Amino acid sequence: MARKLTLVFAVCLFACSRLSAQTPVDTVSLEPYLSMHGVGAPALSPDGKWVVFTTSTSGTAQLWKVPARATPDGDAYWPDQLTFFGDPIGGSEWSPDGQCLLFRKDVNGDERQQLYIIHPNGSGLDSLTQNHKAIFAGRWSPDGRSIIYESNERNEAYFDIYRMDFVTRKVTLLHQSDHQNGLINISRDGRWLFIDRDSGNANDYVYVVDLLHDKPTDEPRLLTPHSGDATYNGFTISPDSKTLYFFTNQDREFTNRAKLDFQDPHASVEFREQVPHDVDQDIFSRDGNIEVVTRNIDGASSFTVYDVRTGKPLSGPTLPPIGFVNNLQISNDGSVIAFNYTGPTEVGAIYVFDRNRGTTERVTKPFLAGIDPKTFVAAELIHYPSFDGTMIPSYYFHPNTTHKAPVIVMMHGGPEDEVRPWFNSLAEYFVARGYSVLLPNVRGSTGMGKSYAAADNGTQRMTSVRDMEYAGYWLAKQPGIDSNKRIIFGGSYGGFMSLAAMTMQPQIWSAGIDLFGIANFLSFLRNTGAWRARNRMAEYGDPVKDSAFLYQISPINHVDNIRHPLFVYQGKNDPRVPASEAEQIVAAARAKNIPVEYILLPDEGHGISKRENRIMVYTKMIDFLDRVLQ
Image (cartoon, rainbow, N blue to C red):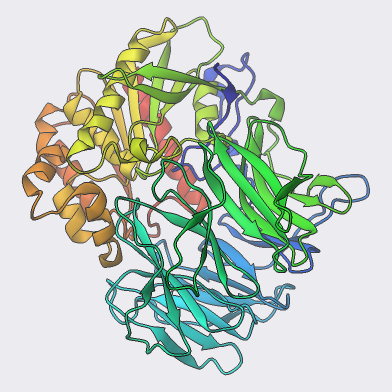
């Protein structure tokens, strides 16, 4: 049965809403929509009294703090701003004693993030690392005496694991090897270091290092041997430092809760459930007695609180049945749970569930720029048939109009990603302007099982491109659609899909919008960040062994087929999809006299993080579409 949902487009970094159906299209202004913003990345203090979060009120996402309780009349308190950088901050982590916050930040989107600390009152800002040619990602040790972090400062292609004494700032190497060593955590007793190694977005392995006996260069012990692809996420180490909890899709289609007694060298993964849904998040209170789990059920989030000792579910927060929950946080004693929630008509906000009081309160208030939230609209979940009969789940917005509407097909990035029931700002704006919008979860998307996510790997890449083609055919049959005005839109991997559509399906699409997309797989794999190349090769193919195939599927080699205009945006500092990808497609298209509007921003990376840049880029994009559709 079709359900009404509203969703976020992965590339869109601003919030919009729909004006009333009576509002003339030419009066729908974009800038107020770009001024709207929700909140994200909640960090709950250990005592459950405060929430630090990010919001872009000041132009870029910065840290703010608010009480973890609503006012006596049920409203949110006015928050305090803690940081004032020109570059965005992704989130923060409280020290175990609640005295400091750890966060990281890059410069102009280059993703060379450095580690910082700040006191919860906004004082004491200090930079812990200063090597801006390397990437740092870390977390507090369980005892709060040190910060454990991963860094590629030895060799940009590999990450090693270090410990920094918080008082003396002395750095100790814990593990070094020529791998993508990702930090999981250290056990409470300080003896066991857990790391994971990716061999692609769909496959990784978990290892343990015995810090009491192993040298930093010793090969760690593999905890998760397996055949085929498997992912492991959501790690928690038991208070007694004997059991590792996580969720995995090892030997099954969906990610389920599991555990491993890692001190037993003969132990194997033990599943704690078997359900046909992916676990999204799984966290435990510090005492190990309360567990909180969210699951992906047909795109929406379910929310369950468990008593670990009995395994039985407890009372949870009161939320609408359709929505999306992420960024779970829990107080030390498990009595307070904080999380992000966004629903069909709600911009992202932070909610707090108090188990003792049995209350669910919204503790942040999104800024809506004067737009009435009652005018927000919802998308219908539909399934359209692809070339081989596979039904492709998609979300469909259609304006309230008697005229045939132009349509925009928005392709998500990843490709290991999924359109979920988040508030979709950009789709809302387009619907207000009289567009229909379709957001497909083509093959390669997550949330529908491991086989579906792997269905576009390697030489199967073009199956997802054909899924996109058949979205165009389905739309052409819809009575409210102007089939002569079909626009393809995407960012990152979605940008590749947009370019593939324009070069390989020119009879379908009237214009293409490419935001930092892949134009040439061979040059992309050669130029993407060294720390990412192996991971991306596992998804797309080897540039040596698979060079002929990668050449064949690269849009740059089919520019002659383009019939209609392109809009291309690129951040100059993008380490994921380098600017050379955009430059290639723009130069090749212009050489063929194909109309191309190109924007290159010197202070952005893989996205558009600054408000003034968002306003400029999206305004020019809307002007481009208005010209094309005339």
